[in-house]
Length: 441
Ligand code: GUN
Ligand code: ZN
Figure 1 (cartoon, rainbow, N blue to C red):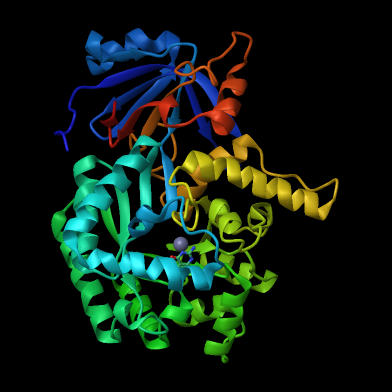
Figure 2 (figure 1 turned 120 degrees about the horizontal axis):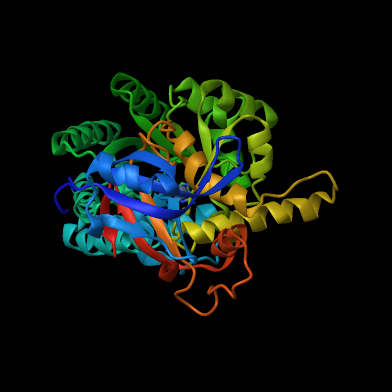
């Protein structure tokens, strides 16, 4: 990655961001970036004062056009990097059969580090290009390839939370670990990531899901997470057959959630992917522990797992962020996840047929992909905002770059953002900054 930018940059134009109450702010402002942070923000009339205060060079003043705006970087809280070759493929089976027939054989190939290198470069380039400034990755069970993913994220400049996947039961013989190997390799992986001393990369404790992990493995991983205060990621209550299987495997637990609670895997840094079929009591436990759900609407539709009611999660006080779950979700783009979150919510509304039920709006989708995901990561002080003090992870969007999205001249600022959520694609994401560095030009 390029060396740190010591020259301050000033951006002058529309700043769009979600607030913690899920409302949307759209303001014409000056935003000053120095090194890896946003250091100042003020009215456009303050530009001269800012130029003097930070000694900003003329060539480092970026004045946005009327069709452009700045948005916090998108945060994908659930994506499987080794499933990237299957994106857009193999969606004819429900979860458990899909795992056996397509997913485990694909992930097993990541024993080959050359293959990992090629796929992971393409995965990170693709997600960065679609505006994912932070990704929370499941890799495979292989430590070496997981480390390759970490180095690629560091080199290409994507902020990433990376987990070596752990699985020691109910897995095919060619893609399974012993309990001891799973733990040892996880510990070694954490050490290797720590030794990278990267500001961008952090390790995540990653038990795949209850059916793939013994109680002993889950408990030891819970202890490891607690010792080093690490993030945890796993899957929960995605598919009804999976929920039944968990009941049969762990009969002393009253629910799927209780298995994670009992093994120390439910903390304020735990990301639970899906949560489509969670019971009220489980939501209360998740909220009490400060954990949250990565809402993965594309995957929930594509694998026919169910329609997750994100509004219900929000109303229960559970943290909610957004995930692509590529390749259960066919698209690695969070823009796609944002619009499918709205359609999933519309589907809930149609099925409920209740006037009072309010489906998610385009503004809610922006919240989920930025502030909601930052909250899920327990990083509301550093990620997902354009205020001074926050990490300079943001997108420069241009709606004029293609005929479908180009404004006709009568649109409001809200209209620009609305159309971005529903109709934009990578082409509209003209620039991507992570930690103040331009990583997509
Ligand atoms: N549950 C356990 N593993 C997986 C996975 O790879 N994808 C999805 N969607 N669900 C899972
Ligand atoms: Zn997943």
